[in-house]
Length: 199
Image 1 (tube, one colour):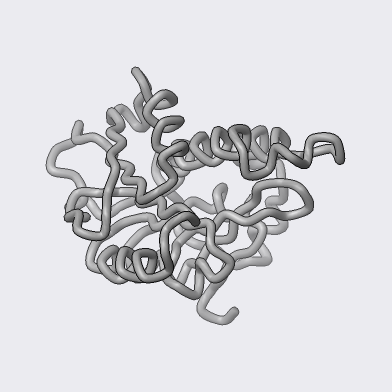
Image 2 (image 1 turned 90 degrees about the vertical axis):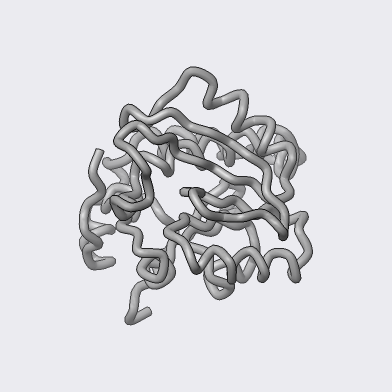
């Protein structure tokens, strides 16, 4: 699946919620009743975030040089968030995206980010580690995903946040441009907020 060129925020909204049904299904899974509010921050939340990270791969276009061969795997790296790491490894078993296999690995502040396509930095990381990883990721075409209140300001392409008892996400096209990434209009259509050059 090839990603579409970014379009205006107005057009994202006109397309509405009829697009990107897999992420809409995940969104609905996190609609919590008052009796289920204690699930936020526990296993259900981590499972849904892991599933969304996996789904993001299909809605991003990386530069051709990001892959050594036509069958090179997507590499998802996780810093902290060991529960998300476990969920992702279970989820991607025997799965492919765009005919590419998927590899999930753990990274630290000392890890080489070369060859990584998506980096998830969990909120349990210190701000020092978070900022260090964000700075290093700027040297690569990496989809940086965080769950930090200031995620986009700190350089994230996608940032998870709780919106009316659901897990939503914001997107920065500015930061995507820094990483030389193109995001599908279908992904932008279901984002809670899209940061553009003029926003």
